[in-house]
Structures are given as structure tokens and as C-alpha cells.
Amino acid sequence: MTVWEAAAQRLPPTRTPTPARKGQEVKRDFRWYLLGQTTSAAGSALTTVALPYLAVHQLAASTGRTGALAAAPPVVMLLFGFPLAGWLDRRPRKRRWLVRADLLACAALFAAAAALATNRLTLSTLTLLAAVLGACGLVVEAGYFAHLRTLVPGEALIRARGWLQGGEQVGKLLGRAVFGLVIAGLGATAPFICDAASFAVSAVCLLAIRTPDRPARPAREPARTSDDQLPEGPAPGTGRAWWPTDPALRRLLPAVLAGAAGSGAISALLAPYLLRDLAVPGSWYGMVFVLAGGTGLVGSALGVRLTRRLPPLSLAVAGLLGVALTAALLPLAAGPWWLATVLVSASMAGQACCGAVSNIGLTGYVTVVVPEAQLGRAGVSLQILGAVGQIAGALGAGLLASSTGATPVLWLAVALGAAGPLWLLSPRTRVAPIPDSAGRP
Image 1 (tube, rainbow, N blue to C red):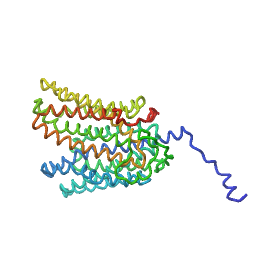
Image 2: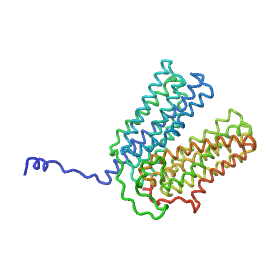
Image 3: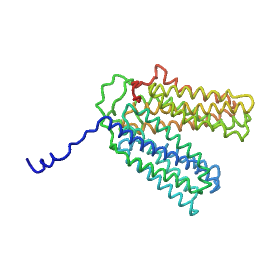
């Protein structure tokens, strides 16, 4: 026996983690991730409100410049979404890129705060900041689903997505609620500093995760006789295409596009419909949106509970049908202005609640079904199609309403919203379900 073998015998035996211990580690790491995402969402909500506020009140921006400021993040997504997502899909370790995106956003926000404090902030600087934050958000979006898979076992993915969405809703509500107090008490630079600190917290939370930053090795793909069978791993050659090629995802895209078009049409017509057609006083206009934030949080919590009883695709379809049904209250609103306000408020609150439920089901289905090599492009493709659908719906609704009035176009928007879940339920286009136990521990 050599000296090294004798020394090795005196070492304590290596402990193999028990299932209970492994479960505790998963919960701890997921809590770190949830804390980082919630904190980052709160800070980002501050900046989202602060950018147009500073552009108008501090820099006297015209409506054209504020429009360019608002358009910067979606333009970045449309131009660089697919290439960046495809590139990130080929990176084996997603977490390090999430950390780098958080640190870049943190540095950009601190630089903007310094420029504002020294009276060097310009509209071009604000627009550049919005573009940088949009690019960082694009990296996070592209790596979000694949990174979640490294933290949570497959049977708990849907519930984990629901918890993350609920945390983000809480963060956004908190950020919007305290914006006025932050500006009044701490000054105009405070939103940028708070958001930078939130990105730093998110980076620290990601670094605190102990789960290895690498994807699980996919199992060998079984034989598939039709597109209705689910993929278990990436097909050869699919890791380098910009557009996700998974058949299950392709069948979801028309439903996403139709729902986004209906949502864009409603967003474009809501203000003139309320203020002109229904004669709601301007002082009551903001009350329409008060309930929507709270019911979005309720929908996230409800979606988490429903994942124990419904498969994710059924959850998504039920949520989308709920959005269409509650949206129908908009063209039905009539009578005195106070009654119309109540009906419209109920409609917006119902859409927010059901939309949160459908989002948990839809993104959970994508996370489980789409091969890991396409997850980044899957998330970005859903975002881009949603943006394109909203733009098309808003422009089309504006043109049609100028000749037909708002009410018929709102009914058309409701029909578009209902077309999405009906497409998924159609026997000829029905998306393959996943096992009922997936996502429900």
C-alpha cells in the first residue's frame, strides 16, 4: 500500500446527496433566482416610468423624441433578437451571460445617473440607455428558459414559472407605486441608482446559486412517427438556425400573433373610446387601470395553483378564452359614464388576470416541450411576434376606427383574441399535449 492510498483511506467517505437534500438545494437556488428577478423587476419598473418623465420634464422632449425613446427597446429586439438568441442558444453556460447582462445594465444606469447629476444628460443619452437596457433584457429573455431548466426539475417547471411571474408582478407593482415618492424624496437620479442597485442584487443572487451552470445532457431522441410526438432532445442541425424549427412551437405562433393583434387594437382604441364615445371624465380615466395591476398578481397566484390540476396547454387555452370573454365587456359598455367606467374597469381587470394565467401555461408548455438548443430563440420569437402583432393591431385598428367607429373594431379585436385558443383547440392544428403530470409535482 502506497502512502497516497493510506492517506486516502483516512479521508471521510464522500456523501452522496439524498433526494431530500437535493430537493432542499433546488429550493434554495430557486429562491435566490426568484429574489433576483423580483428585485430587478422592481428597479426596471422605476426606470420604465422615469425615462419618459425625465425626457419631458427635464429635457423638454417633443412627442417625436419621446416616441423614439419608447421605440428603442423593441427596435433592438426586432433587429438583433434572432441572431443574439441563436448565438446564446449555442453557449453551454447561460448563467454567466445573465450575470454579465445584469452588470452591463448596472454600469449603464450608474453612468446615466452621473450624467444627470452633472447636467450632461441628453435625449440621445436617454435613448442610448433605453437601447442598452433593451439589449440586456434581450439576453435575459433568450437565456431565461434554458437557465430555469438547470435549476428546477422538469416536473416543477410550470409552477416555477408561475412563481417567477408572480414575483415579477410584485416587483413591477412596487416599483410603479413608489416612483413618485422616490422622485420627490431622493431626486431625479434616484430611479437610475435604485435600478442599478437592483441589477447588482440580481447578479449577486445568480452568483449565489450552487447548481452547476451547465445544461443537463439530453437523452437520445426516440423515433418520431409524426409531428404530434414530442421532441426529447435537439434534432441534428437545429442548433444554428435563427428561427426555432420545433413543430410544437410553430403551431403556437399563429395563436400568439392573433392574441397580440387583438391586444394592440384594444390598446390603441381604449383612450378615445372611453373619453369620446363613453364620455368618461378625464379625472376618472386612470381609475380604469387601478384594478388591472392587482388582478395580474392574482392571476399569477391562481395560475400557480391551477398547474396542479391542469396541463400547461389547457391552462393557456383557458386563460386565452378568459381574456377574450372579459374583453367583450368593452364594446358592451354603455349607459351612464360611471356604469361604463365600471364595465371597462372589470374588463381590464379580467384581461390582466386571465392573461397572467395564460402566460404561465404558455411559457410553461414551451419550456417543457421545446428542445433546449432552441429555447432562446423560442422565447425571443414569442416576444417578437407579440410586438409585431401589437403594432399591426394598433395601426389597423386606428385606420378602421376612423371610418367605422370604435365599437365594431373592438368586436373585431375580441374575435382575434378568441381565434387564438380556437386555433389551438382545432383538431387539424391542435398542438400535441404533454403528460398531465408535467409541471405538477
